[in-house]
Figure (cartoon, helix red, strand yellow):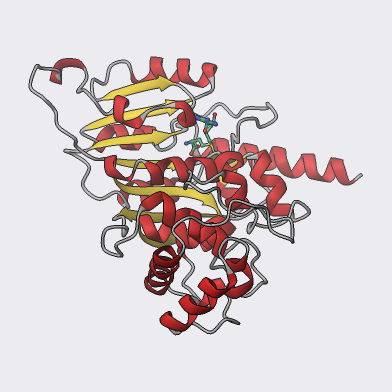
Length: 346
Ligand code: SAM
């Protein structure tokens, strides 16, 4: 009974969609690869507008899908590189955009793509032998939610080649990315994102803005890539590894988390030197203070402990390493949360 009611609502919604977007062939396939297509015309325009003037810019679109954003971007961008994993969609997009010389459709997994190589040359009639230099791209996309964190980490790591991000993600992820220290949502993802740039949440959308509708709300955020490692005089990999220690267990105090990786006297002294109370929680500490604490600890114990802690949390290895996605998801909603199932579904 419940299922029948649901399916009537769905077909009504589909026919409404057909009125708004008459040229769109509404798919009856079960969503895969996070394929919840944007059908809200106003939202499409707002996302493209958030990029500003892109007439002289290279724009990378992640997951163009059925071209909701791609068509608008193609009109305005100096050069558009759209990266789609789905073979059928990529073929359709290639046919649709063949006449446009400023558009390239790449059938590829965004996670496997080397942005440096992709941005290395200028295509089509613009191609010439002059060096193009290390220009920066704008990155835009209504992301497939099941790999949001992987994509964000990849983009952060490519900060040198990216000027702005304008991304649609699950609302909870956007809230964490932009959260200020001392607020409920502030955690490892917030601190990491804010080490790579300045972030701003633009707007939220409900499930009805997509076809098929996801089970969660969505939000668009903008990020100006402006890494702070030099300003705070910290090394990138070491400091990101340190942030993971600080947020290893969100409910524990900094003192307890730090003891997983540093000797007790070193922790005690560093907290005294920096004036941070041992009972403080990591989410209350701004990045500037985090950096001072890191530098003090590093001065007295250059290599954090390699051993696993008593609580079972793994301390960072002696040499800093790139962050793993699972460590960022530890502070995300638990698997039982309805939103998290969407992290896999979209
Ligand atoms: N941009 C379209 C829109 O707004 O309607 C589609 C967005 S949909 C949420 C996500 C898109 O990302 C889908 O087209 C999906 O096929 C594509 N996708 C999923 N995983 C991908 C990956 N690893 N690399 C590139 N594209 C991917």
